Length: 82
Image 1 (cartoon, rainbow, N blue to C red):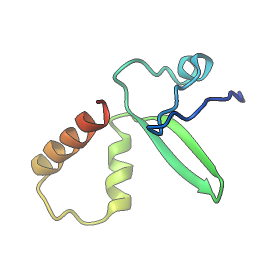
Image 2 (cartoon, one colour):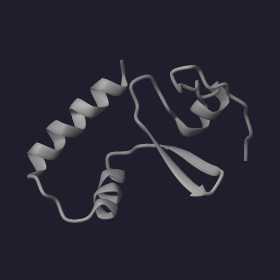
Image 3 (tube, rainbow, N blue to C red):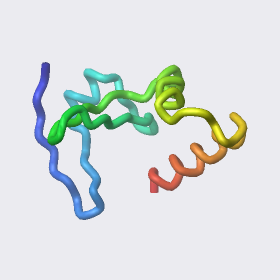
Image 4 (spheres, rainbow, N blue to C red):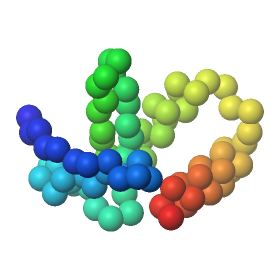
């Protein structure tokens, strides 16, 4: 287990420390998932394509087609990268 410290910018951004990026094999352009596990604790993990199934299971029944969902998700992710 590794513990590192990061600083939150005024935009709410945190740089993931290099040791953590290396351990999780996170590269530029990768997506990460943040999960609140307890009141003041969260975990971060690399978002693998298979993890999307887990996300969809938590969201519940879809109100849009798979293609519509993918397009919306890509738009949301592209806005976050700016």
